[in-house]
Amino acid sequence: MSSVTSYVIEADGGSRGNPGPAGYGAVVKDAADGQVLVETAASIGTQTNNVAEYRGLIAGLTSLLSLAGDGAKVEVRMDSKLVVEQMAGRWKIKNEGLRPLALEAAALARRLKVTWRWIPREKNKDADRLANEAMDAAAKGRAWTLSGSSAAAAEAPGGRVSGGGVSGGRTSESGVSDGRAPDRGALESGASGRSASKSGSPAGRTAPARPAEDLLLFDTGDLGNAAPDAGDLGAGAPGAGDLGVGDGGGTTTRERAGLATPTGTGTGWRSPTSVATSLYLLRHGETPLSVERRFSGLGDPELTPNGVAQAEAAAVKLAGKPYDIQVIVSSPLRRARATAEIIAARAGLEVLIEEGLRETDFGDWEGHTFTEIQRRWPDELAAWLADPSAAPPGGESFGEAARRVQATGDMLIERYEGKAVLAVSHVTPIKMLLRFALLAPLDALYRMHLDLSALSLIEYYADGPAVVKAFNDTSHLR
Figure 1 (spheres, rainbow, N blue to C red):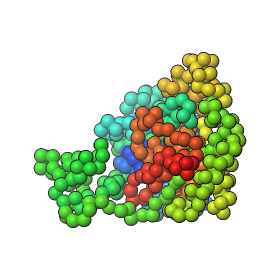
Figure 2 (cartoon, one colour):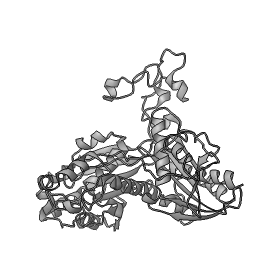
Figure 3 (tube, rainbow, N blue to C red):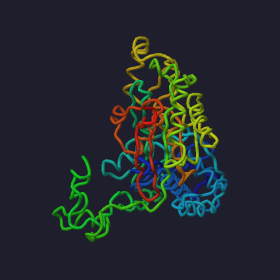
Figure 4 (cartoon, rainbow, N blue to C red):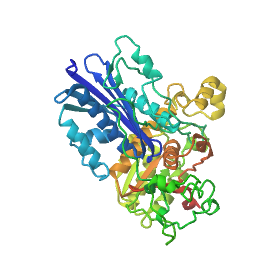
């Protein structure tokens, strides 16, 4: 038993794709001096952000109970508003897939004296770093262990191994995997996905991976003796070996993945069993800055008359079937809000403002063209284009924007599960959400172009992947 009388748990979890390769990190600290007592992280296969966050919480609570036993006083800190509010009993659990995890976490929490506290992501660096370390290790086929930077902490003054973790911790943060390009709206970023595989510590744990067939758009039990040909499915489609036809090793990929034996009946494609959450993404209408192709972040220009006409055209398109929009959310910036209000007036809905849907803050570059910036800030521009953690002078990095947008997207999917939601936003947030859904590499960001008033659609399924159903649709403007 530890002599410490009060503790802090910091936990985090995330997914590179939502769902995608996922994992968590958790840290137990002495509340008096912030000394790290336990660190743990683990990869959990393919899962959603919310599942990973709950797994991080469970790992942190389990670690503390192993260290201090029942009755310990602890403040649990997480940057997941959803998990904190649900565990505090202020929000209902609407996603049945999360209920078992919430019940497990609640059972552990009842053995402790817990205070729940939401913190911004930048205050949760240790847990975020651990999860990133573990995800990176898992991507290389290795398990996360207390090595590398962890080993350095073990040698630090006052550092001690406890419960499989290392005290005297670190504050370094893993780099965020994002990218961006000039103008075209604003470039993007990929949120910092986080993950890990089982650590060597008693607190380390590995959650069961999501069933492989849940991630596929085809029915693996319906393929017969031949897999779909890559030419039928498009470049990069799974080949016969990927689907378990045989790899010469005595067992097939399908058998190793625990998939059903094919029956050879039906079409080979399956339909999701859950109702989709449809997220329509609409870029705002034209502004004076967009006409002149100037950086437009938190500067708040109004719509031009043409921009108003574009919004009205979008309102006509989105009225009624097949869209049946039930919720309209908008960036707080005027150009997006005005677009959303025109659509809401026709649909008979109110506009809900979501701060996380705002454009990136371009700081001193606001209102300038790319050429002007290149002339006045050549070094800063080069750094910004090369490194997502670099920010324009006085502005916001794409890494910061990515985390904000991903958290907002997760919240919308959770809060409006099964509904058709219209989000009126800007180039950066829309491209980010599309990239997350596609599990696309950074270079894909430079291959996306979004027109003014363009409509895109992502559908999210509880029993399958996110699917991009439409991109940059401007048919209503013709």
